[in-house]
Image (cartoon, rainbow, N blue to C red; front, side, top):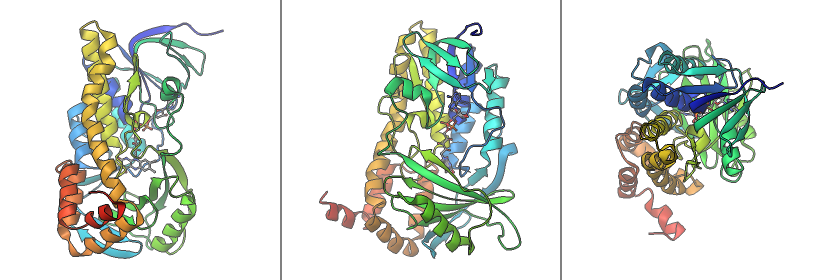
Length: 391
Ligand SMILES: Cc1cc2nc3c(=O)[nH]c(=O)nc-3n(C[C@H](O)[C@H](O)[C@H](O)COP(=O)(O)OP(=O)(O)OC[C@H]3O[C@@H](n4cnc5c(N)ncnc54)[C@H](O)[C@@H]3O)c2cc1C
């Protein structure tokens, strides 16, 4: 027999950075909000855990709290490689932080709960009835909503209910990772390492954590159908052999974002809206920002008694993220094909300023058009554009 129905002004599906940002924002504004996640927390989430200055700015804006308890490593530089050849490095430039998502996401969810969000954990959303604004959970309970925020990640059940599929198989990205324990033979590194030339339309990384190094590769799946083999080759070349441990993989909506982030009274944010940055693969900052924007739009619509206006209000705020992603997507078409990577590999060793501009971009202190103009001035994108027959 089905359990009794409950009704909320806003229901958020997903307790990752996007869902916690949305639930925290609504609860702090006094809106009755319920967040549902299929997992009990803390739970694992495959992720490099790199947090940029953009992430810190967004976290502070949305959560108004301290994130230091869940930061495992802090660095101020980076090393760049083309395959095994070191191209350039930078020390003492811009802050970069590293977290473990198990701890980070539990911290954010706790901040949402402490503001008054009701949490339903360990309960999967099994059906979304958009016609009747109602969800059915794994235990048979039904929950009604005035507004629904889908923050349930790349395999979003909410996006599937609205659009028929969670993502495009043609355009989706994928990533593999391995947690490598630090030891006498594999010491801690002070700064992250970024590897070009290990994948088509993607890159590799080694990120420092408290007790491990997170090694990974990620990129467009259709450009690298043998990504696991490429990851294993990368691990062998970086560590001498494949370190013990379980290699895990996960989809990444790498540059394939929704032009319209929802439908009717359903708003999508974070990976459910495809918001992973098309060049750097950064997703946490955009998840928190879009969750915040969705919640602000829901709050405004509820306040004026015009719930139906929530999506239009969200679309206005979302435009800022969509514009950034469109610009990044254009630049990616120049940088990621093999020729672009080879030109980068030529230009990087000669130029500290190129490394600095890349880090400025990640810190949200440089726009994509500014970065594009800089690359053109350096002569990096010009030959590619000429080859592609574009001006
Ligand atoms: C290999 C890899 C490395 C990455 N590295 C980085 C990095 O270093 N830095 C960075 O910024 N980004 C990185 N990303 C991207 C980043 O992980 C995502 O963009 C980010 O997690 C998106 O947050 P979210 O809240 O939208 O979704 P998620 O974090 O995926 O959260 C979704 C939540 O929804 C829940 N859920 C799903 N379905 C249901 C359901 N039916 N019912 C109830 N609950 C449900 C899940 O349990 C989960 O808790 C990486 C991604 C991958 C795959």
